[in-house]
Length: 355
Image 1 (cartoon, rainbow, N blue to C red):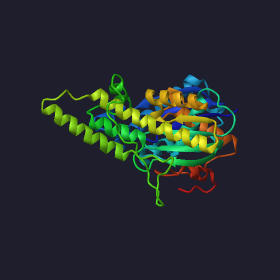
Image 2: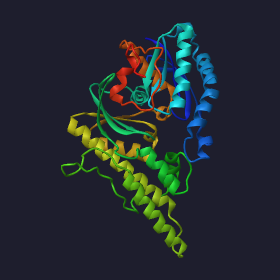
Image 3: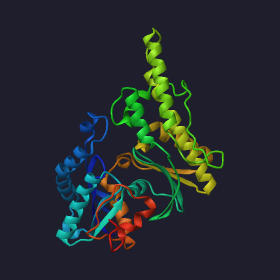
């Protein structure tokens, strides 16, 4: 089995890992959360600078911890798309430079394919095709997986991603960044049924609603109105602002929408296994709701290990390993791009780079 050094710098996590046979020999991450929290979100210029500072040390660390020499590597991989261009360039240039220096093949990886592959770092999957619910700060999609590199998108969010909704609601509630952990902590003691909130639907041009697509912008607006109403009541001598109940009600409706539509899609597609990946997959209420619903419907389910839900290089290594074993190799001249649909990932392995 091939051994790969993988790098991930698509947003605000600097990461390196050495992977062999879908097993992590070493993994290291340098987070920038505290620095970006001061601004309430990721500042691209700061992210790029911190990647430049952190990545060399992370590479040195994982190579030492894995006990693997550069001569023993079969390839070097890095995220090439999508993401923040300046951040992507740090990992891509570093990976391509190391590949050229040590005479190794370079494998550019689609960031979302990395998330899809993160589940392979946990318990083995049942055989056959399966449905992936990818929920992160930038993406909320349902993807059918028929095998390595064989993906079909069946649903997506038409506006905010689920993670983005968590960040925005956390800001409305005066909580910290990132919003997912902050809302989860605030909601722990709250009543998730106290405030009914809308489950956003996506209208079809011919009438009716899309059965699977998501929309979270209306939910965000409903929370804003609720917060303003409750703050006004508090200012007028009413009860103290019920932070825990608002957070729990929001968290519950997001979990319900994601799980209800995903299980419906799986059943309609005749798929017996649901996989959940991405940063939002770390949410406890969402995990519990998925488990409960899948057990009721007799569906198998898997969630990426907690350590690999958020951005990391181990998942990039697994994705690169699958592509490499199938004959995939990227041009050493492959650049990066901020946007690239998952279905277009094969262009990363064309002899003439598309960008």
